[in-house]
Image 1 (cartoon, rainbow, N blue to C red):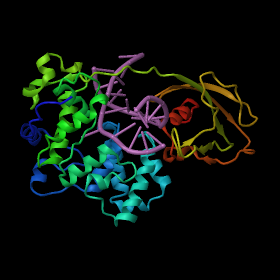
Image 2 (image 1 turned 30 degrees about the horizontal axis):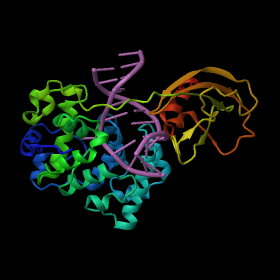
Image 3 (image 1 turned 120 degrees about the vertical axis):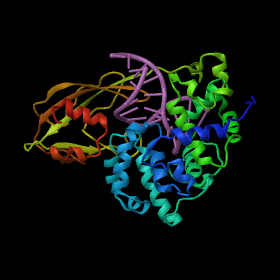
Image 4 (image 1 turned 90 degrees about the vertical axis):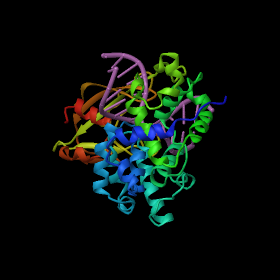
Length: 348
DNA sequence: CAATCGTGGTT
DNA sequence: TAACCAAGATT
C-alpha cells in the first residue's frame, strides 16, 4: 500500500503559529523562532508522563516533579522510593521505575546530557519509538516522523485508511516522514495539537482544519469513521479480598508489591489472590473482622472486584510490611486502587 | 507479536 | 452511565 500526497506542512505550521496550546513543558513557536530551545530534561519528563495519559492528568504531576527535581542530576540522585510516591495515581508504574533508571543512565553514561538523536535516545530505559522521536524533533529539530495516537487518527482520516492502523503502521510512518519540514519540532507538536483539538476522536472540526483540502475522509463525508477499529476483546472479571488492619493507635498495615508486574513496587494492604471465582476468606491474623463493602476498579485488561475487610488487630505474626500513620497515608506510594480500598474501610 | 500495564476525563 | 480513550514501552 502506497499512500499519496504528503501533508501540507506549511499550512500546518501557519496554523500552529496562531493556535499552539500553551503547556508548561513547551516553548511557544514565537520563542522557538527567536532561538530559544526546549530543555531536553523537561521535554523527556513530559513525554514519559504523557504516555497513554491525558494532558489534564499530567500537568500537576509535571509541575510537582520539576519543582522537586529541576534537572536530571536532581532526579537521578533522588531515592526511587520518593519517585514512586510522587508518581502514585498517575498509573503505568513501570514508567516511574524507568524514569529513574533513565535519569541515572543519562548522568552516569552521558555526563548528564541527553543524547541528541532519536537513535541515541531510544537506547534509554522507557524511551521507545515515539518518545525518542518526539524528544529529537522537539529539542533538536531532527526530521523524524513523530507518530503517536493523535497522528494515527489524523493520518488514518487524511488517507481514509482502509485497514486498522496497526496493519499499516510503516506506510503511515513513511508518509509522515516524507512530510516533515525543517521546523520538525513545531511540526510534530502542531500535528499532535491538531489531533487533540481539531481532529478529535469523536468530533472533527474540519472547517477549522489546515489540511482539510487534502483529507480523503472529509471527501467521503464522515471522518469519524476512521481509524477503523479492530475487534475488541471483552474484559474478564477478577475477584478478591483486601484486609485493612489497624493497630491500637489507628495506624494502618501496609506492604510492598513485587517489583515487577501489575502495580509493581507500589504499596498495598494485604489481600487474597485475584481470581475469576472469589477466593475463600483467609484473614491474615485473628481478630474481629468486619466486611466494609466492595471496591470495583477497572484496569486496561480486567475488571477487579475487591471485598474490603477491616479489623483492629494485635500487631504480631506480621512480616515484611510496616505500620503507616493515618495522616501519613497521603504520602505513601499507594495506587488509586488501594486508596479506594482504604476509603471503603473508612480511612480517608 | 500479542499481551501486559492504570487512571481520570469525556461523551 | 457505561464505554471510550489518552503525547506507548516492554517482553
